Length: 263
Length: 263
Image 1 (spheres, helix red, strand yellow):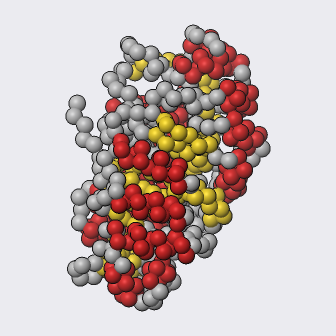
Image 2 (cartoon, one colour; image 1 turned 180 degrees about the horizontal axis):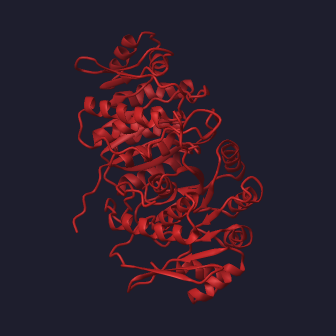
């Protein structure tokens, strides 16, 4: 019996017990799109669907032990980074990208705050993201507030120009944090800017950014171009939000399980 | 737009970076079978597809903080327990089952050793499983070595009798650890014993027990009887193993993503 192995995406993400965001978003999305997810937890969290309450970043040595054993065993096609939790963990990830993971395409979702508002990245972590991770990033997926915080610029065009100058090859800036009109997402990179418009959905969602970045990583792992991957990732994410379920008192949880693969 | 919310299964499990076992097995299985998984990590591990190398159980207070916030927010239909990691975490889980989770059906997969052989439960943890968790268990899913270790008996019939005496309502003893012939799984409980035979697959697999217990929990959450849930869980697991992929140097990884729901 011949075995067709799926591509493997390595995710460095936080763990969210509610199942909306973090490693669960990665796992459900990648699995749903035909990839094998493997994950190293950067931080455990206590949270509900309303907000993140506590964050426990891993110890750097333990984190590296877990990551190195995994990388030595599985053939990684794409790396996806979500919540990092601490500057130490971010530096450790930077070291892995420099050495064990050199040359493997990287999708970086720069999570700086929880949907409920809690700040999730101190100044020292933001500095490591800018100096050690952005230059190794194939696609960065900030929302507008994240793009602004990373650059100090206000206008999305200016943010994108500065992020590209810092070294990432493509930036997909999402417009979900605007309050009205259609959601406009823009992909900036070496070629002309591409934009997509999506009907704005009426609720708030727990893990939409994680879903988008993972779906984009899946597309790259499956051999799509950045533009194709960005396009199918938005379609997948939009459908998971449209089908989201309302289980807790806070934001809705994306429903990724009932979606048939787009790829 | 009306929302049909899926049933929710709360999993207390270890985290396995390879994605074969632990929370990832829970998430992929439950999501694939139409449930929403929420997970509280009992222990982080460093492992590859060959064996578990290190185990870091959570601190009890952090674990309880994460679990209580989640339980207060999401409506839990079924609880599934996998790797516990320490007697302290097992006791904390026992306390939650006594109070916040009282009356909710429990599937307990008593993980005592890794597939690669590493012991994962010391004597004090086994004692807590027997005294605090077994009496609250609806379905226990040991393999034969686990059933023997929990009871001191040798014959599966004797093991089952002792496990039922200790207080769990049903015991599904799996025969995958035998070395030849078909795999025979037996469900013991208040009514007559039911058994199933499955063609023995030629390889070793990383996370087959987690997949089985999660699929069983999914069945209960979807309203099946214990016998129905046990039957579909075995079929789902067998198919995920038959389709398993060979990505690492050790055991194969179950492939749960390409399976259509059985339910």
